[in-house]
Length: 241
Length: 156
Image 1 (cartoon, rainbow over the protein chains, first blue to last red):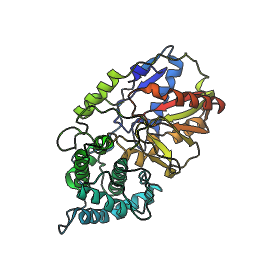
Image 2 (spheres, rainbow over the protein chains, first blue to last red):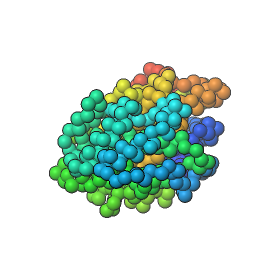
Image 3 (cartoon, each protein chain N blue to C red):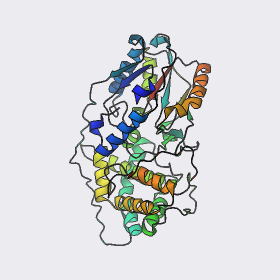
Image 4 (cartoon, rainbow over the protein chains, first blue to last red):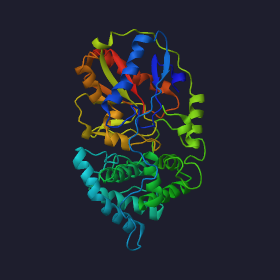
């Protein structure tokens, strides 16, 4: 893509998407990436793309990581009941991460950070009913989007809650992006709810936005039944939902 | 960013096709900036970052969000529509996506001249980058008025 855009100076980096400067909590590594990019200001005399070959140092990623919490519910129940129970188990850890960091990423949907239960209940209800286009009305929650796009951001807020719950747990290894997704989609009620909502979006074939949101809801490789985007989809520009 | 071979095969194929189909944009006028240790640097992100008070990005967004240099990380959220990148890294260390502290450290050590007062974020996720021309030119004018010498574009 850089070759098409032809920026004056570009540094290609080998890091996973979401980690453009490579190593989390490693200021020298990040600054070295920046220094290498800034050196192009002196060395480049025409549009230049240079490769940064250094890999980010190992952060204890363990592809065999597993969540130490037993999330298996003691009793079966509705999807809503099981999701709320799972959220309750994770809540102390998410609160601890927020306390340690002094911040949270939760809130893209418009919900406040203390409204996780409201989000879980709303999302589970959509998963259970399959109604992905009707307006979601939840007391005291000021949604930042309309359905079905709202579902995309509720999913992100819930995933953020789960990621933050994992971050505080003891252990020497840190799950990478793939391990987190494997855990969510393979072992949690949230994953079950995400896949059910995706099914509902698939069935809403008369809604172009629902089809688009389905492709944005679940990382590639975790949607059951093939690709998240079954057909070539062009993002509409400023399309109303 | 990232090797296609490190991505899920479907995602790799999707991005490769997007890259091949991307309309070419001719290079702009070549500019030799001030020496780095005299230059003021601003960050331009495509991570869909914005302050909590700002409207979120949505599908097809071509606009940008202003991020003041003194914004606290607890006031930044990420409303990018893609699910195919690691968001947990930003949650753990926001500098890995928005390296404002790293710029301050480089300025403190004299490696760069200074840090801009204002920084910017787009969402990206647009197959035709020429659609951002109007917003990009506006940011260019704002940067010129803010005394910015170098724009450090950080993709997600």
